[in-house]
View 1 (cartoon, rainbow, N blue to C red):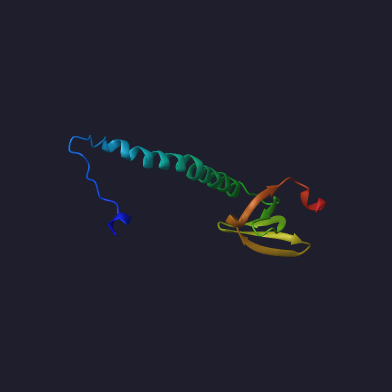
View 2: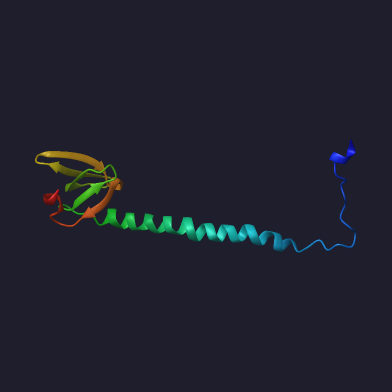
Length: 109
């Protein structure tokens, strides 16, 4: 019944072991590729969003992450008041603002 089990053969004594740094080359390469394809673009998007939120002003027409479009009526440190319809004002976090629309876009909606 031993024909189903293969014999274990040890490495010959004179065989070269190989360079240990060569074994680390592949994981290091994967980390570098991961950084340039995933981490770096995410950091760039975060910086752009931070600039957008810091540059908000009264009267800007914005769209929130939830899809609510309106005009900013008041700004605080962390919150903004957005008028979504005549005399309908909601309070949202500044970080929830996804995009600033060009002036007059709300009239087209």
